[in-house]
Length: 477
Image 1: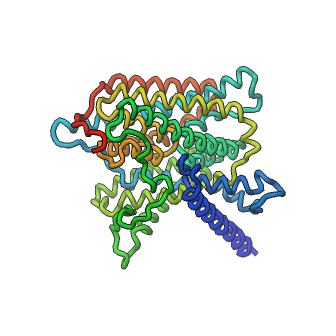
Image 2: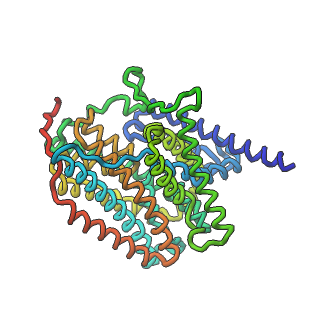
Image 3: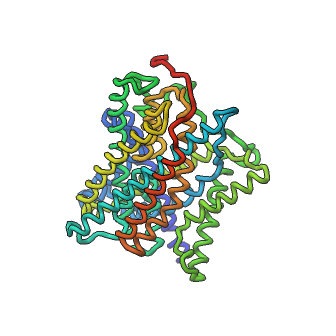
């Protein structure tokens, strides 16, 4: 009997993954064929997820075109919270420190990375202030009677974290025994969708304006966007990028399997640690989500591997492909199980925080980069705008629009600063949400405002305008 129940449960999980795969394929096809999706640069996982949502029983009920079983939708709603553990655990693996070039450029390179890191932190914290501030405003004015403590914190989660971070929100609130975790996860998915669309559109407008004013170093308009970026695939075999290096011999173990085993092994240790902390009723520590322990444990494992001289066995690109794959499935799962009715309850504050958030993010990215960088300030600003309204790939996309061949040093600075900021973001997540739940919206807002002030002061003190000097590259060269 137990085997039959277990078999049925595993079959449900397996079929859910098959369903998610079909939605990813459908999204890939539509991205390649529909000009609107190409202009909006929507990821295939987002397109596929909304196909499942809009044609499924959550939106259409008994008239669903895709009669997805409720059990599968329940599994899908839980998947982002589970998949986020290995996704977050993979962050420190293969992480390299910022290394400057010889001579005087060393300090400038480190300085550029640090300043971009602080700017990313300022914008993310400002998004928290805007989101939670909107919640507080609607609460004190009586315009929102049934709000929950962490409403508004999803703005930063969706904007600076992307769709995958919705799983972090759901997992964390579920671990804190908050009954609204599924609604909050849905709100985070919504802000992520609005953010990625709004950020790309604003970025394209800014790039065209900047090109006319001569702020860009490599392009004159966005007409030069490569076709493969629009359709989402590269047909030319010679131009197809490599997924990474094979550090292992397949006669022993597949390289992909080795990297996945490292990530899942550490994830398992983290989940086990949380389990026993709860069994032993350890206060505070037992309430910390598994992904937080996973990232700390991976730092220890990666540090040990470096000490033992085993860092050669890890390829950052292979690791990135694993976390990217898990993220694609987490995104589709979060979207097809989005609790539409619950999210629509908070439509007015949601739209308000998104509009203010998009405007504030664009202005901060533009003016802070212009103020604190001499060379390639606009290229840096669009990279920051993209990642603070979507994900790393969104920033990379906008950067490629203004620097098609990546001739500037922005990509390397941006990559390192983004990695460090991701670690900081995951560290602040449980703190911000914990304060909101334990002490209320007002105290949480004060804490976030104080954090924003600290980052701003750090930028003012250590971000004295400067940076590496480069010979300007003529447009069209």
